[in-house]
Length: 188
Image 1 (cartoon, rainbow, N blue to C red):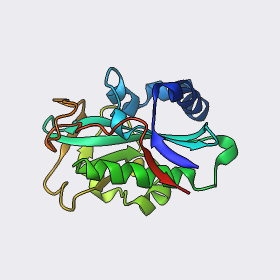
Image 2: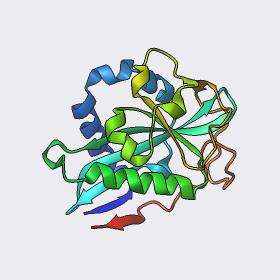
Image 3: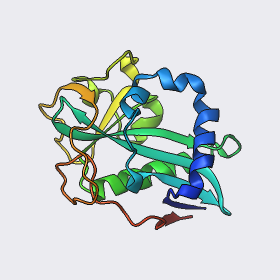
Image 4: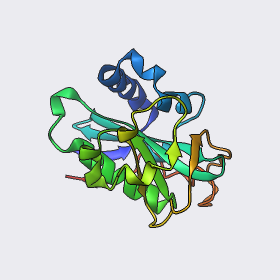
């Protein structure tokens, strides 16, 4: 199995995995409203491939805290039902977080179960001063600092990115320079 950057050829399978995992009600969730009309960061869209088949996916979306602090919203993270429990999601998470840090991103947020995501550094305590538009169970709104202290003194509403500039290489914009599509991230 290998982790690679998602290509156009993978998108139909990725969309089907997400639809099967979360159903049509996913579009009513607060995180989907933040994603609506915003492109995910293509350089951080990863898929797990096994013998050419997509068996897992992970995406990140640019957001801004209080209209000024760039951050990433992680999700969805999905593993094919027949492959759950094999560590595919963990491999995607580690690869994605490593790539985000290498690109200069400082803050990542998600909505999910803290007992699962804590092993990747996500905790509720870091998101306590942040808000999402719409209702979200506060116990499930988690954050991680890719650079220690990045959330110190930061508070406010998480919203759409103020500025998106692909290929800038600047860590102060919501999306940094993309990785060459198709590059392999890791091997088993």
